[in-house]
Length: 264
Image 1 (cartoon, rainbow, N blue to C red):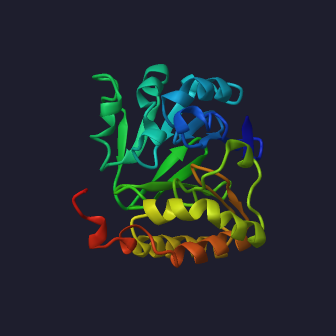
Image 2: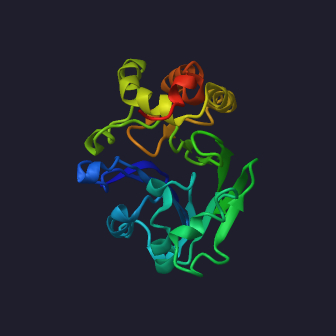
Image 3: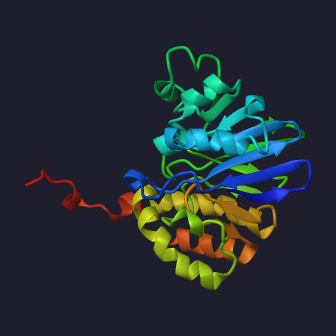
């Protein structure tokens, strides 16, 4: 199933949310995203081998895979990019990923397949031209990976936020966005455990929120779509999320010497 996030007839953003069987080996639900601008396409966080066949077949209804220009990877975890070798074989696309991971992701590939096809993004981020538009690789380091980027599409005003905002839900719940503060408050329970463990520290959460908040207040971001779970729509909900994440104790904030002991 494809969920249309934005479509003005020329520029389209699609989300695929049901390609991972939630019960298969306890695999976590994951979202994949396709941005099409004119005759060029970019696939964000295409996930691992268990999604590849279904994703390439579903995507073909909207955009021919052989014309894919980029794969945009927020970081290098298996649920983000483990299918890289198959995409490099079946298309002529380039991979855009943090330069910190540009020498590690070839380990997902057969020898030689990634040569000359990886664009390493510097820590400060960059803009990526796509058709008549462009996509920003936005710094999101340590949320949760050392080199981590979110992808911002100014045309649709969507922030594709990787693991920030991720929730642990079944795929059938993803189609319904969070669009009210009441719904957001109920949704916290499905996000809290993940963010407390996977986000490295409250400091980086606050730095990230400080970057995003002015864009939300100016209406430059109207939707935030994470790689797992439900997505967020509207200024009120986005500001509620920022208030929550700014105050969250997480990662190393919650660890002490009791967590570093030899096992009994």
